[in-house]
Image 1 (cartoon, rainbow, N blue to C red):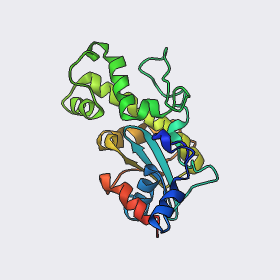
Image 2 (cartoon, one colour):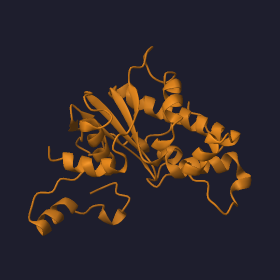
Image 3 (cartoon, rainbow, N blue to C red):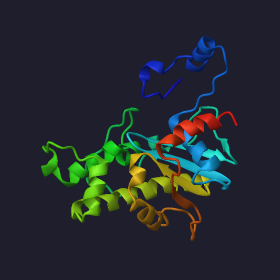
Image 4 (tube, rainbow, N blue to C red):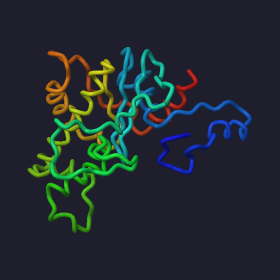
Length: 231
């Protein structure tokens, strides 16, 4: 295992240990890969030849599925766009600061597009709220935007531009038929309008055919995708 947030697993023969204990074959993929597989096989992107599945939650993950088969690769990192740099063309609330990622790099996509990243952007835009008793989570920010809070609406517009620029990097390389969003932030309705509006400026084509889709199976998609590993 490597690149685990549960760092005690890194360097361990996790799959082999489970197989020895259970006396049966085990198949393993990370949550984003399982999510992508679920949504590609019989979810939001069913029937399409290629899917990039995205989790926008506590972290940012991704998985690539081609013809209902999960793409892995020799380094087992296919789809890990969350640890690419956020494009310099994407707007920031503060342009004079950088964000340290747990991976050791700075300004990874995850540090801006994860739930904690969105909350940090909110406090950068509204420093007077940092001492608030109730934290400004992604869900709370989305609710404020829905009821007309101008700062929250501005922030979601900035976030949509950041997401559009980051997804454009993947689309320019993989050219998937669909991008399916999952995780808590995928429940913010306005993203499905704003992101396709903005990503055209970053994608190398005059007419973007890639679909941006909301997941079909919600929080169950990861578990369902794990089952599809056996298909």
